[in-house]
Length: 502
Image (tube, rainbow, N blue to C red):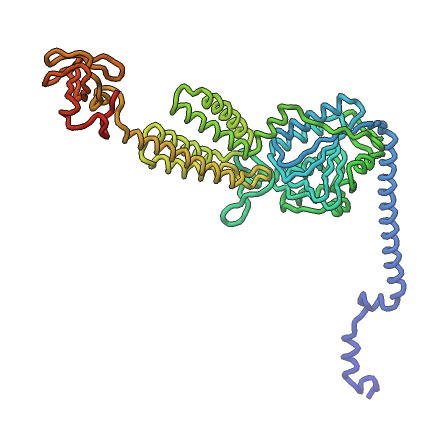
């Protein structure tokens, strides 16, 4: 037999062997494949690096063009407006007047030295509109160390042409809150923990608003959105690293000098600030702005309202005093004006009004404390809820509520005491006022005559004859005559208790 058929398994092995697979074809050229792959990777890295360099060169060219196109703006004076506390209508007037002052000087910039927990959304947007429309450069300087630009302050910082922070300051927590009046500083949720539709609308609107400011000023828009949606906050050093603020300055002088050479965009075009050595000009708001700042403090507005209510109560209870009515009316109008500008919970305000109405009703129609105490309770509960504490900078001090309730209770106590005394007091007018009064006989004839009582002459009658000079007591009144009896016959002495002489 042929040798190649001696082992049948050789034929099977020969028939089942792979013929011409991809791996078999590449097995002979691994080095070539590896070289091609490395070449492609290297080419890709080179292309990416070149593109990155092109982007950097383009950015540098754009910056150079911006510097070349920007007009130098000499800043010889810096107007300093201090924004301290909650942001409300008074702060809007302050910024508006500060911008006007800087505009009148002609070669000045406005520096907002800020330390705020937040404030009202409407006032914040008004301030930002003023900044965006201003031909005067605006710098926001978060100072001193330990200060914050929280909530509404973050929006103003993003809108400013130059954003500066002192060491150890912070900003953020810019989530809006919906309530009477609107504010910035908190959020709302459904019972299941998810945002309710109204809160989503407000948050989305605020996100779009602050991202627009960030894109306008070339600042970090992603962090701005995080501050609104999640209430994120960062320190001054992190704010510089993340392009939220421009630089850190230890004091006001360093903040103003640090803006020198910076390009900012104004409505008239790009300008290069030349602020080194600028004179610091403190700004004082006018009288009306200061008054508005005082009365829009929630505690002051609340106290003004109470003074107005108490003054009117005293005037109505004692007509003719005038002074209490005038002071009360002025205070009440100022208080209501301030409350109209503040984020008021109107249900709580109605509860306060109900409490006041019950207390007034107690004064005019004494119910031995029922309406008065109920009014005091309604007044205290409404007072504690009248301002929502979620709006930063607009909280009502609980000690003011306690003091006001105590004063209200004292007024009710005085009114009740006076009412009880009036019930117990003897009537001093009319027929009842004459009964048991004593007088002196002036003339007498038979059973009739004249007597002197209350410095008045009265015709009198008696059951017996009297003589001039006798002391008599009034028993009753019969038409125009008084029925009298001698004091001795009445069984009492003229000096005895209960008998009054005239």
